[in-house]
Amino acid sequence: MIKLKCIAVDDEPHALALLKAYCARIPALDLVSTFEDALEAKTFMEKRSFDLLLADINMPDINGIDLVRYLTPGPMVIFTTAYRKFAYEGFQLEAIDYLLKPVPFDKFEQSIQKALAYHRFRTQQKPEAAPFIFVRSEYKMVRIALDDILYIESLEDYIKIHLENSRPILTLLTLKAMLDLVPKASFIRIHRSYIVPLAKIQTLHHKKVKIGTEQLPVGESYLPELKAALAL
Image (cartoon, rainbow, N blue to C red; front, side, top):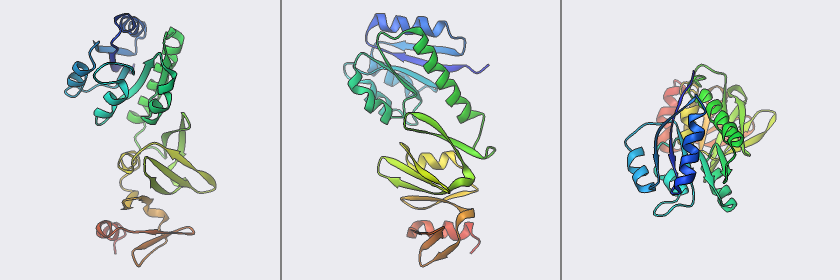
């Protein structure tokens, strides 16, 4: 059985005790440690590997949003808070879920099931072995067939995944994070704003690749690697 190593952070002792009790009721969770002090939690988490962070948002010193931003690479996150106004920022960080206090156990359990499902996608179904990936878009996990991807475009905080015969998918990821999801043998970065599947490149001419009806620029620093991948 999959077990998620998790850490809970909340400056309210009774809320932290409730999370601890909830975790004890779910065999798939291994609660590694709990913290009332966010700064202490930050120091601990920088030195330890874990899968899931249960974090309050409105805390002194460091709020939960900033705490997650400090962690690189970031773990899966479930935010718990009494304030609905933080929901947008929580989802911008691709949180698995956002729970309003007081958190009922059934809602907590549903969030853990989401985290378990996402963990399976990340660990058991490797992109190199699977013909698809999952990304979070519009508050849900969306399955994308690798063969359907035309190219991937960076739009500041978001990326747009352009697909054949379907509307593009927007997701809150960086191109670097996207490169970790797709098979490295099949996809290549050609520009600071573009990743393309090698199999979809029709031509390379004057530092531009043609994919379908699009002409995409190739950055000077990316050109040698692209030529090598195309055996040019």
